[in-house]
Image (cartoon, rainbow, N blue to C red):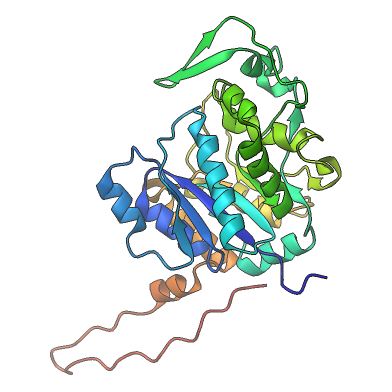
Length: 326
């Protein structure tokens, strides 16, 4: 019988905007964070992102990741491996460096406690209608290379593994501990799958979903997951390769995904945010959901000023400790 509350370890895959990454790490307190920074990120940006982080943050070995590349999967799996080895977390969440929570730690823990042995991930068996005319089967059937955000495809079909149920889904997910372990096990024990997926198109949207969907690799997954993504993503209906950046005008629809009466399960993360575009919106999110309480109190505290006639101002009284709303 479990004697400790459910809690996630958080993998954060980042490559830019160190101020936002540090804010994200702070908002995830007290959960452990396993941070990967793209090996191509300049050293000055990497240092600004990582110097002086709290002890609950561990840096993953840096891999050269990039749009649509297999190395994104390798970085994700290295995060699972580290989280499983270093923590007793009941779940492992995969975030990007442009994500942010929409729930305080107590809310996240309560949600995971109610689904202690289940993953939160929407997986779609191929063919998947949203992936075009062939339902995404060409992503698997042919060899691909990503070059300057363009797809290069070798139009010669290849053999596919027979014991795999091919599926797709977002890289953003929350896996139950035993499901994360199954992904690591498949990565380690099936070099044939690693070789195969190195040339799949956008492997980070099909490798893990396929491993999870294959009874030979992850027995019981079909009955052990909630097909509900925990991320709200601000797609606006336009044709684009990545979601738009969120800013203050998006506040109403963002907050509605957490407070609306028609929401059965909450979205506890959202994307995409940046320091330049989203700081005002993130201040609102912090206040609404009790995130970064010390920073919120510090920002709200009055600044004492000295008057030449009266001398130095008296120090302000000590602020009360912040309370995270249940």
